[in-house]
Amino acid sequence: MPDRRQPDSPTDDNPFAAPPEGRPDQPWQPRSGGDGGNGDGNGPGDSGGQRGPARWDPTDPIQRRARYALLAGMWGFFFGIFGIPSVGLLLGALALYWGISALRGKPAAATGDPGAPTGLDALGPAARPQRTAAVSGLVTASLAILLAMSSYALQLAYKDFYVCRDDALTKSAELQCNTLLPNNFVGEVLKVRQ
Image 1 (cartoon, helix red, strand yellow):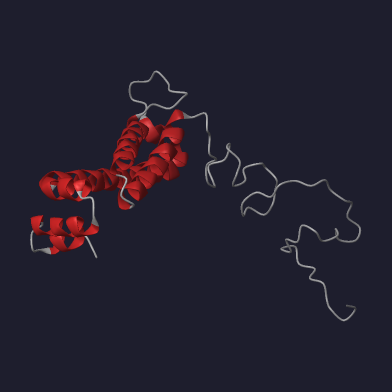
Image 2 (cartoon, rainbow, N blue to C red):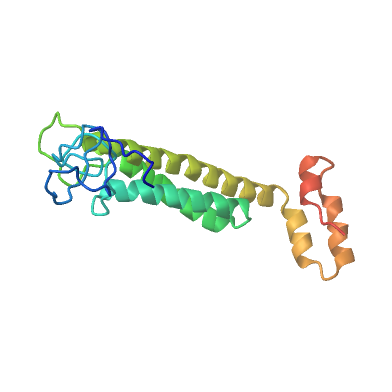
């Protein structure tokens, strides 16, 4: 549109705009994070700079275990909620192991200094997302193990009911097993419905 003015300020950051008149074309360079675009290579994704989030390094065992702890704990919790306590217990135990080993482990490029930081502290600024993943994995692993253990405790406490229900051949025989449950909230949750 001819009536629209183009901004001439030096703060214009449009990477697709044509260069100002009298200035030659320049090859593309990645922007650095908020320092005026001097192109020093210390951008948000650059591992050399201290700014910006750290990149996921799948070869680092600490980062790998932190992510495994989060995933295994989350899936263990879901299996515990959906009534498969054996898988929930297995995944919860694995997540607990991976979370603790991620928090206490040594980085791949560990130095021999006795005073050097170990575990996730040795990663420096990259440790924050990994520590969050490891702690979240520990929390979800604890919940998964708690759900599995409570399921097994219920099956042990009301063993007569579960044996009666599993051995019943008809629906009426299965309904008769409700007399083996107590008259409280647990009995109402576990009883066989018509």
